Length: 162
Image 1 (cartoon, rainbow, N blue to C red):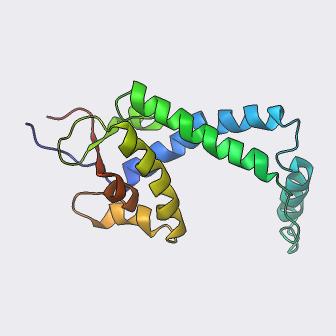
Image 2: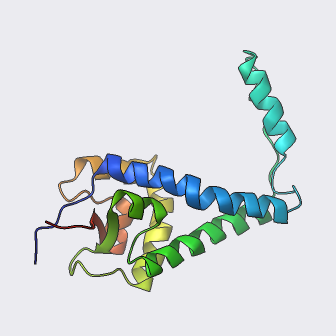
Image 3: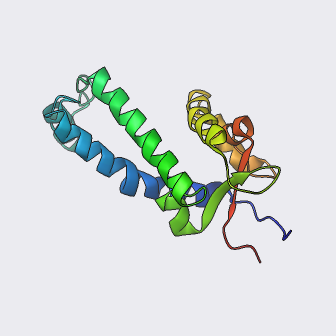
């Protein structure tokens, strides 16, 4: 087996940013229109942005109202789309594929299985609610694994091994 090259914090951050643009944003747009604008109050959001740009200190005093039903639909949709990409592209989302990294089983270095994909997805919640420490762990661990990786038994590596 060739040497494993772990994907570090910044390359994973870039992949996540790209996934937000190319995966989550299109899903959000579709769901916003499916909800007939009832997912969140976009006009309030626009008003807050305009107030903030004009230097108004009270720009964030009132937040747009959101529909829990549509928010949950969005979260589940992104989860399912992400897992479909992991299955089709062997542990990669569009962002990960673009930067040349993918998720593998930490012990065998083979494709992650469905159980790992589900645990890893829910592990993002733990990584987020731990004040993002679950993600920041990637920057400080030798094996570059975050809390969600540890929970699922996965790791993120470069796709092209030397």
